[in-house]
Image 1: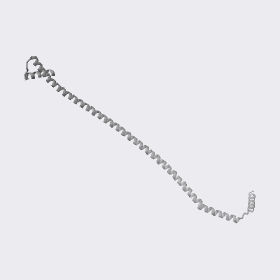
Image 2: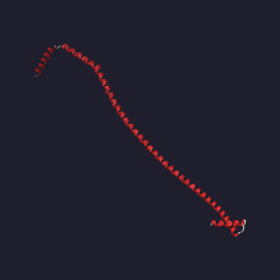
Image 3: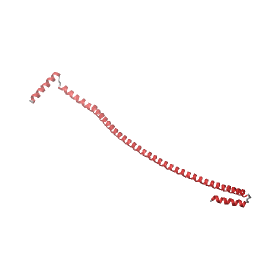
Image 4: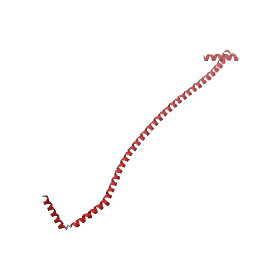
Length: 178
């Protein structure tokens, strides 16, 4: 059965060749021409096109790799930025705390200085008051002694000498002091 079919296919091919004007030598020359053209195209067109396509594929792969590297570097830069910002915030907070502490110490020191100055003013005022009191008491004793002498002189009707005046003034001063 195979042989019969093969013979039938051969007869059909021969009939078709005769109908369309098949020439074996022409067919072989066209096959050789086609093979030469195919080899030339492969060598001078297909291989350079494949080379260009491979080069583009490599550039695209490099671009993707570079994009990934850039993405990673950007993430690292953002992390460094966040770290620097956190460190700067910590330093700023530390400076603020130190400034508050320093201000507290300065305020306390100024308050202590004010208290000391107030105590010093009070001490000077007491001292001035004591001096004024002593001076007033001295004047008062002197005036009281003079009044005692004058009163005694008027009451007794006699003129007192300087010894009598001094003795009366001393006695009046002792009584005031007690």
